[in-house]
Length: 411
Image 1 (spheres, rainbow, N blue to C red):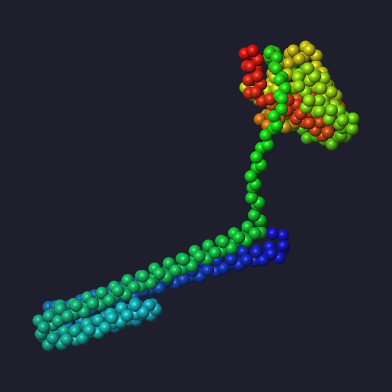
Image 2: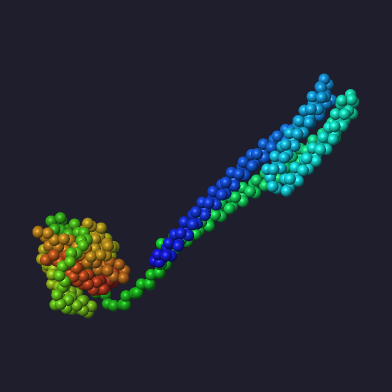
């Protein structure tokens, strides 16, 4: 997304979505707070109304109680009736639900019926006809009180249903606003950052064309080289690490022609008789004082020297196998399948270890002790890698060599 105008528009949309979500969240919270306050006010009015209803029933029963002053209770009955009407007015004003209004009106009608019954009971009680007054109070009066209580409970139930629906609606609105805002912000961020391209499936590996495999028979393993002997054989230096090559002059045209000739001769090689001379030419092309060809054993645990150039017979006789897990440039090149170098100093020359990599993995290493800082020259490193790649085509995998050895032993 490189257009500045589009990026600004997307950012404004994201901020707008966040602001809208914040406003709707605030609005929903206010609605919930208002609903809670209204419910609290309704509960207070409901409690007051219920108390006045039960108070009216008790007052009416006091008309016929022995030793009670009828005048006192008649005045108190009127005050309770006024308190009940005030509570009903508060319930009516606290809701806009028509069903709640209808229930409150039914309660008000029951209150009017109760007041008519109450006037009859007063008349009998004040004239001393307590028996008739008791009959009205404990039959018609009690039924009127029960109807008022039932109507008041209907009002309470309807109010609770209304409050729960309002709270649920506010929560749904809040969740919808948050979801929509999150979706808009996510889409805007994806468009601003860009979607990474889908990974393409790797191309199927190309199998190497069948060609004759050079039979490099391993000689019997010599004794392990000691630390002193290992120092004499520079291609297996024990402190090898990969170095960044500094810019140096490249190969001359004659060197490149010689390198091409070496690769051509390796491609046509059919037996090991011509290999020493080719290694000698490769050593000259790389400006190396010595060169060793290492091949991994069938178990894949050790590197065996199978051919060399530039070292005396005594050095080669003491040169043993190398563990592929060893801390040296040759083993590191085999494990990583990358060219490794050892930097030269005032006392020792540098070294290059180039892996012999085939279709089945790394098959060995070509190590060369180079002169004149060749390990820092990119052209020399590239030449070593080219020669090693051509040598890798002549060496079969360890399993193939092991099978050839068994066939030779059987013959």
